[in-house]
Structures are given as structure tokens and as C-alpha cells.
Image 1: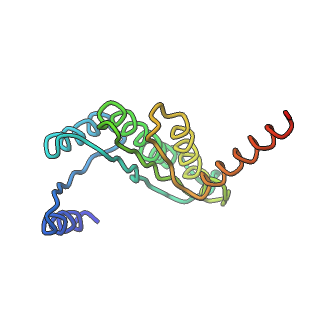
Image 2 (image 1 turned 120 degrees about the vertical axis):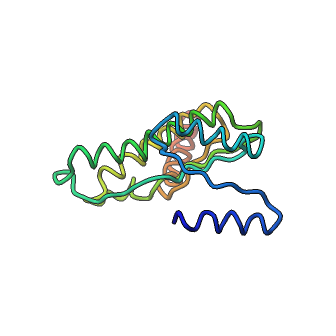
Length: 160
């Protein structure tokens, strides 16, 4: 994957675009801040953040150790928190944030417990974000929106 980044940046530049490659430990808020600094320097700001960094290490909860849990939380949850917070401070007016979640949130597969828990938390942060430019995408988010719409429609019908 790392070797592909410079090639992709090269293709973007060959098509008259501008691109840089940057790597950051998203669980480290200072590293995230430096990554945004690089974008500010190269492009004069950030218009779009796509939160797609994540890990999945499958195991049943009874077989998971603290290290597995902590690494999922550090990257999948704290990483999203760190980038959301930084973007909320620096995103250009009209900018957008996309948080990637997972259908595993609603599927309850026995070996996905820790992973699904972190992605459910990402969905919660997305819903609680102060910026209206934040969106999450996953089948479980679409299902949640559908349930809310049905619930709101049902409550409106009862009030009449």
C-alpha cells in the first residue's frame, strides 16, 4: 500500500492535479496536527477529510487481550476523534468530512466485537459532530437513518 502512494500522487500530477503523500499515526494528536500542517502548506488548507484509517484484528471477546482492544480503540476511535477535532478547527468553509464505518456494527458477528464497537463509536461521534458537514457511511448508518425517519413519522402520526 505504501509503495502505491507515490505512484498515485504521480498519476494525479500527470493529469494536471496537485498531490502530496503523507503518513501519520492518527492515534497521536500531534502527528495528526502535523499532517494537517503539511496540507495547509501544500494546498493552503483542507477542503475534505475522509476518515478511512482503521484496523481489524478478529477474535472472540473471550480471546481478545488488552493490546488488541487498545490498538483498535487507538486507531479506529481515537484516530477518528483526533482527525475530526483537527478538521473542525481547520476545514475550509463549505468543506466536508466523511467518516467510514462498517456494516459489522449491526451484524454482530462473534469475532468482530471489538472492531464493531469502535465503528459504532465512530457513528456516534458522527451524529454528535458540531459541523453539519460530517457524514458517515455504512449500511448500519443507512439503517439507523431509516429507523429514525420511521420513528419520527410514527410519532408525528400519533400526535395528530
